[in-house]
Image (tube, rainbow, N blue to C red; front, side, top):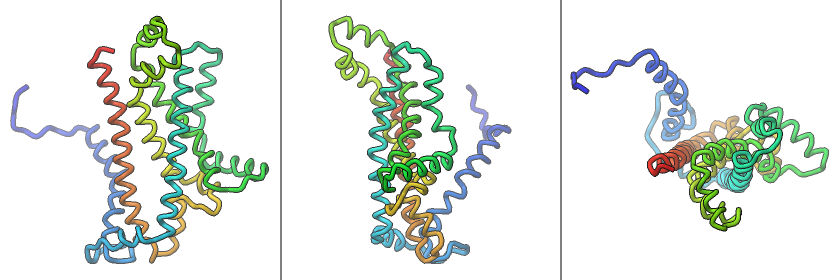
Length: 271
């Protein structure tokens, strides 16, 4: 490699990537910008720099209640969907079964079915059964899609290491359950962590299903949407939204980092 002193040229694909990133993330960057503006109106020119909207966000009982509602839904959904996704991925990758391809299509269907259709269908069924709308109904609605994401992550993880390690454990007299905990689980742990982080983020940010099934306990996306009609209430919402935006990027980054770290450790160790 020679050093010519010239800047690298950006081709057509590079220009497209820059335009794509600017188009996607450019408008999002205005969120923290306006959250630091000392004005209740979202407009230019900006006034003074302030952090008071962040203080008001944490002092708002309704805003904090909706935040904790999202956490109450997201944590159990992440745990349950990761457990279900791991078990389903192990069954698909380790056992021969008839109808595996149709089963995979059925499990992955929540990723392609429009959320509004699922939300309306679940609302009709829940009303017919007579169940009250609550955080429980939101969590139940989030499970299929989150489980599908977890299944996608865990299949790639379980197919990423040598199955002979499990066979060696079984040949040495260990049962299937302890083989999973002592051999399989440590190897797929980065994928499990990635699944937990990703499914929590998906459940936490989900709007359409929660809109139909929220009842009297709105999650944070529903509360933010309801405050768009009140300009005076919007700046604290923007402030909290900016913090959640940063936290979402961090969670997704670490989810991908854990997934790639597990893959790297396997390739470097020759597993």
